[in-house]
Amino acid sequence: MHLSHDKHNKNLHRPPDDAVWFVALGGLGEFGMNLALYGTAGKWLMVDCGIMFGDETTPGVEVIVPDIAFITERREDLLGIVLTHAHEDHLGAVEHLWPHLKCPVYATPFTSGVLRRKLSRAGLEGKVKVMEIPSGGSFELGPFRGEMIPVTHSIAEAQMLALRTRHGAVLHTGDWKLDPTPVIGGVTDEERLKELGRDGQLMALVGDSTNALVPGRIGSELDVQQTYERLFSQIRQRVVVACFSSNIARLKSVATVAKKVKRDVTLVGRSMWRNAEVAEECGYLPEYNEFLSENEAMLTPRDRIVMVCTGCQGEPRAALWRIATDDHPEVELDEGDTVIFSSREIPGNEKTINRLQNRLIAQGIKVITVHDEKVHVSGHAAREEMVQLYQWTRPRLAVPVHGEVRQRVAHEQIAKECQIPHTILPANGQIVRLGPGLHEIVGEVKSGQLALDGKVLRRLDHDATRLRRKMNANGVAAITLVMDRRGVVVQEPQVSLVGLVEDIAESLAAEGAEMSQLPARIADVTLDSIEQMPKSTRLDDNAVRHAVAQATRRKVMNVCGKKPLVEVHVVRV
Image (cartoon, rainbow, N blue to C red):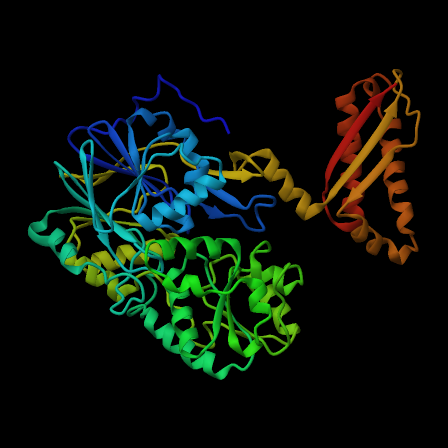
């Protein structure tokens, strides 16, 4: 990926001395890819740097990150990256984007531990300056004084970030909820949040919108733990719990209940083991040292084991999918085993998850989801909790982030009902003046999405991605023409059809056509199109390619109703 460093443009959109700016380069109108910038007095501070995962609309692309060209051009004014917690949508892009930023990273010990392992695998060990801040700690960077505020979430050491400047304070909520009985860490620090709201000192709240459409309160992890205790006692064979590898609270619940019902625990999936190891190092998961290896688990009686594995979203490379397709080197399941999907379905993943669940059920494996039992609670606040936060903090401006349009609009409505004086719903790239005084959108900078395509970062709308979509939907026809210098075809055209042969064969079945005849039919169309060209035009390779491609597309469209990607190779002899 080429990220420009245009010295002429670097002073554009310089944060002013008399105001605080906010601009998101990701996370607005989407779930994932969270990246926020705060600016004042000519300096920028980045909060979070996350990824989003590709889907069927991005063939060949598994990871998507924000386009950071704007801040890369100004990286000498970037003071650092502050991470609120260790979920992929908040820190997963650091390993991909840090080489273009080269600034310090600030995080709590658990988040730092997760990040360091990711950096080591990316070949960045020892290169990135990772500064640890204790949970609830503070720091000073240029015109910013930051204060971490511990909150409950589904991962250890999640923090809200209060940023204080000489113009006032801003609260960046990150991911949070109000859980009165968390299984790891403490409860959300109510007193420090109330302190922010005293005397109207909070200039703005930039807040998570994930569950703004969910009424009531989200519930406690302890509720899930109680459900597990009942289910683990009732199930007579293996229990498999599929969840996110970063959900340390869920892993803690499984370990606690397994010990009560006299089952051993094993982890399946490299990321599950890595995150559990970090949790143990930070004191959150002492049970880690008692976990069995995957091989040991397979030798343990089926009624005495609980497996916790990755793949709750149906990811093809994750452990559960490999188990379901008999592709896992160590683990296999048997008829009568039970798989518990202990997560919500991320929008867009429903079809993939359904395919995985159908595979398991077809093998005689029982599947339990959130639609059957309380086997999951969200890590994000519901409406009543959001109201509570606004009552504590009383900001003058609410900026809903982290969500699609419908969640953010619902969040805005909650803020208005709480009588917050001002709300703004910016888009990615829009610069918001948070205060003091006026709250408004004052400009716009470049934003967008970059795809990790193999080892290369390129814009998601790059031709390579667009062509893959077309190939995926309509197939490919490749034609090789050998012509002499006079424009005469001297060999039979060679035709290769990818993703089309079966379609065309089925369409031609009524005519009695053989599959082996299909390339010949395309070759005939190719020769006809060349014969119809003026002799002088046949000497132009581009003209030949254009004519043959058009004729081929028309033929395939007539036969099977598809417009394939057509590649024509002209060889002159």
